[in-house]
Amino acid sequence: MLLIWWAAQPLAAATISGTVVDASGNPVKDVRIDHTGKVVVVPRPDLKVDPSPDEIRTDVQGRFRVTTDRPAIVVRKPGYISQRLVITGDAQVEISLQRIAAKFQCKQSSPLDIKRRAANDSDYTATWFYIETKDGPQGVISGSGPMYSWGAPSDSYVGKSTEYAEVMYESGMIDAWGKSKDGTFWRSRSIFGASARYEGVNRDTAERLDCVMEREKLP
Image (spheres, rainbow, N blue to C red):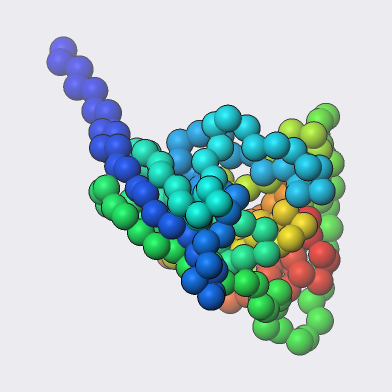
């Protein structure tokens, strides 16, 4: 009997170097370069935690350099609209970060019949906020606990989504949303120790769940 084992080939490492500037063209320091293959931990800004040695951030001239074999990285800083860079090979880039303007995505004014169900575990507290749809109950899982969230969306969302958008608020909360390869939609709102998310839903349901997230002020 012949056994054939197929393994996914890792991406070739690429080196990305560049500069991050603001809307006026001024360099922005301490911008995070995340999802490079290392664990992403985003403490709240009010905790005044020094960056770890593994973190990559821009210097006072807004410059950075990173080598990674991941399909995409995210450039983020509190108060700005984040930028995802899809990696196709070595590159030199200039990234312009814009200040956050709009804060809400809910487009529906009609009330929602939001139901709740506890989803607690031994080391975290969670609630499923759900609504009835033509596809059955669909909802947002929101939880908190010491190990519940490291403060950032998953590498899978960053690397595998066909569409990706993100903002990082001054509070440290990262609000990210996008479209998966199968055509469904997801959203993740996370801060260290807490997060809320939905995934695998159609556009209409995603828009309704956006309202659930924002009206319930999740996470």
